Image 1 (cartoon, rainbow, N blue to C red):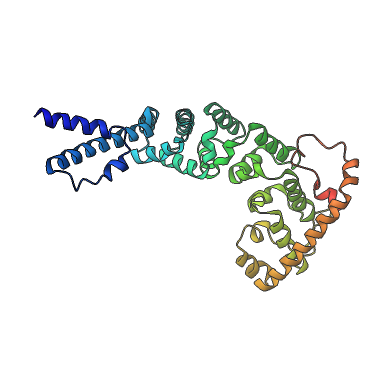
Image 2: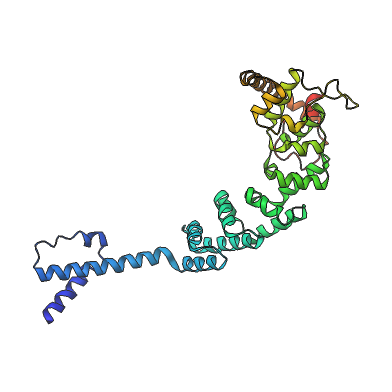
Length: 339
């Protein structure tokens, strides 16, 4: 009996600290039956302990606590596990605390767990925003007119909005009011329907507005109905110029009058290309594609001309308002280009 116990102790000390993959690969075929049985039993026991220890080490107390907290917030165990994976880096404990506070703020905002999960999948960088910053940005959006319901829909659709500093969002809002003369209510509507506008290049944004206002004769309410800011500047110019050269659109005179009845902006801009061609332009796709290539060439030549004259324009433009041209220099709006 003592011999068997001693032999078992020797085997345990022999295998102690040996990686499980080596223990599992031992050749026990030539051992005596009773020794083989003891060896296999000890190796299985050690491997089981090793695997359990490795699992606990990989998980850590922070993960257990995070999973429990997420379940308390209303997430299912599967959802909690999926969210916890995002904090499994080298700074796991710190990341878990940061992520948990941000997720809690999103739930407090009024998003249900499924919506929070979709928001995080769509915009993972949102988890790096501190809860205090997140709350300040949410409060700022409320001040800009995004009330309950609209606020949650905007965040769900475009969570990148909460990754931007308040200064950027307020700058775009002020630009729309002061430079484009939209009312406060109209600005709120733009932010609600086109939140991505806050990341658009300011000079391109100004050019798009002035092109629609001066070149096309469109006023602010019609711009909103057509969703002007959801469409690229290139597409706006291309569709408008195509209609104009086919005789279906005319720039209004100083009194706002035209010799033909222009189609509504929403009828040719906020529609699919097939509807635009079949119902408004009365042209084939091939004709439009050829025209699009010609327009791209014309716009490229305009940009080259603008670059050549850019230095002279910059010297004369010393009284521009600070804050709206932080995106870069060059095009400063449709009116300036056409002078």
